[in-house]
Length: 178
Image (cartoon, one colour):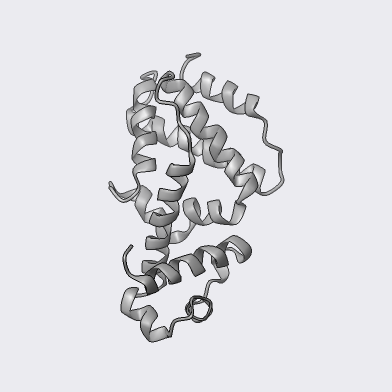
């Protein structure tokens, strides 16, 4: 990002989401917080969906950078690290994680092949490598990802508290005891 106004708008959006959630984002509030006019906003983003998409890309890159996945360990252990860090981030930054993985704009990414979100592509690749073969690769990814996201939502909503053992045992069962 080499456009300073775009950078300020995205930073203001992330800060707003962190404290208020994405559901209440208004372009006027974001423009005001970024110190730009609405005209300057629309010069960079067509609409809120475009802002959310670009913000999700930036957050996704930050998310991947923050994760310290050890590629020297087994594929199962890499998936376990991802799942555990995912759950921990939902505890630390529930609003940001909710936006990053569940806002309506990002749902479209799940429905298409998209190179803007390498994190998702990496998880699909790892899931394919540990797929025990009962389901096809896409179905197995959906099962695995549903567990990780579902468990994270339970944590976020206070239904349960994060237990690393639950993640480890469930993933182990999914991949056939690997």
